[in-house]
Image 1 (spheres, rainbow, N blue to C red):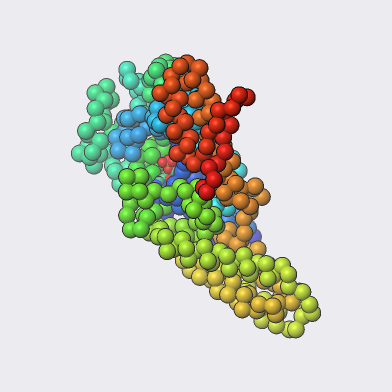
Image 2: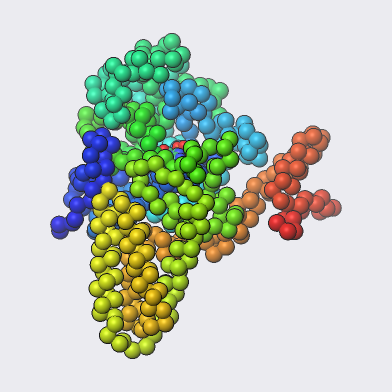
Length: 498
Ligand code: AMP
Ligand code: ZN
């Protein structure tokens, strides 16, 4: 079967070019997932949404998609984007932080944020990957890969770990342009590990017998490098060569550059044919950051009563390969549009009565609009145009109002179904309790936290650490919750008026 071309900007060549799959009509796609040390923010979700839209568009032209998106639950260090293998493990640092206080250990923290992440993912109508592997579940493959690279002399051991020798991989820099020559003078020269042969070399394994998450390897106790995780998981589920690999723009270097070096050294084959990177989301014109107070998680917005599909719609307003400004106004507009899609959907559901011949022209109009919408997505995921086409169809349906009859109602429904398949903006696709009541979802999620805090307070009181017990009580109360100690135990309830 001849399917249409699906064009996408490829970071390696800098060109918008057709996705070529190794197997006809079968896309093997690996998209880097989150590090689960905190709630993901809407910037992260802009990147995951790009992946989702690629999957949906490929499926809309009849491709099979093997879509893998991982969970990083160990090894991503705080300085990893700037200097190799420096800083603390993000997971360990989160456990040591204030928020980390109510988790008993780092595993529990990872599990909690992973669960929260998947909930947010589903609220935003993101397609489930066919597998969501975790770095901690692929330790054996990572150790074997490090071993192989050492025995091939692509890597070497030092007192602090195992490092990939970038000079052993001639085309290092082909994705990011950070070639070895450039790197010699670049920022990485400031890095301090004097045991490394060259500062541009990067860690495959960090030796650390004090680390909270450690495994035994031929190099002693330690944990894997962040880059190795993705090389190994991509290979485990998709094979030696994949068709497409994606992430946010900050992953081009070092993360993806290092993945290429490792994977191609391990297999002797090309690692990936096409690279897609989502430019950053800005909030009200500024870089999103906690200190500027413009840092939103999905649940921050849900708590304000925002419809999750409005978040999705607002994130789709700009094309993925340009930075995009998320504004309060944009979100409000998106909310109104999402309501109208729901209205059109209801109108199509209740339509009845005999056909009056208007359905033929409606069918033609909506079919053209759907085709134009799909074409826009096939043309480098042009979401701005695709949304405009979807919106035009929605307006046509709403203009029919009560005139929709059984036949034209079915035509409208078919259009909305197809738009929902492609763009995910008409109705929630997961039957989650949370999707029927966000505030309930918030409460459910916080319940787990509150219960845990109450347990911690109980232990603090048992250990006669009343200062800690009081500070935990304050922390719970700051969440808008009233705590009461009763003869049968501690109970809590949401403070009235909140
Ligand atoms: P992390 O959990 O830090 O590994 O990030 C998960 C994904 O979100 C990565 O692909 C990042 O590149 C991406 N990302 C981080 N910040 C933003 C942002 N502001 N806009 C878009 N993507 C982002
Ligand atoms: Zn990755």
